[in-house]
Image 1 (spheres, rainbow, N blue to C red):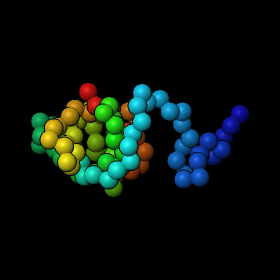
Image 2: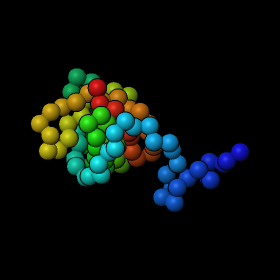
Image 3: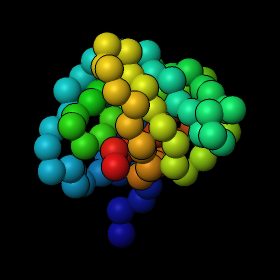
Image 4: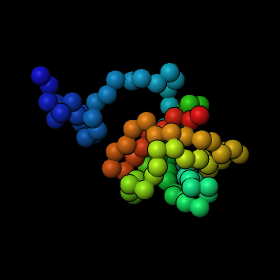
Length: 96
């Protein structure tokens, strides 16, 4: 059996099987997440992006709910997103 340590890549991130239908493009853009009818907001940084999802980095993601709206710098639209995975400082989201 392979241990968790053996599954980690040299970057320290867990090794995973790619399950996306389309590749994400690496980039750095600011993002604003909104939830609770717009009364709650958190700023983050989009690290990669595709038409169907993104990876967003924060200082601390503990307050981010499972579903929210996200506005990405340079885009003229706000999209509904659902979290697909979490780490201590990043989330992976799928757009609805």
